[in-house]
Image (cartoon, rainbow, N blue to C red; front, top):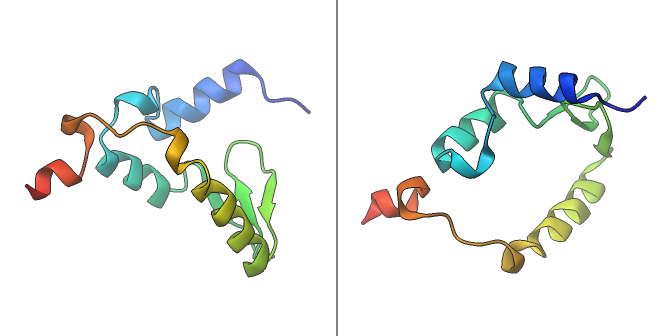
Length: 90
């Protein structure tokens, strides 16, 4: 069953994720820790919190997913300084 726009809005409201492009990395990490994007179910499957879709069912699949996501690194921009954890290290 497709997820409605209302369900997405409610999910974002629940986790305070209204604009990912406007939150500092620290807040993004907290959202990840809170299970806003994914979680591991009682079968040990990595699932989407919003849709329940299974992303990986074992460590090798997770490794493959991480490798795939790593390939996106060069396609994404660096965050602005105010948003970056690295800027606080300077």
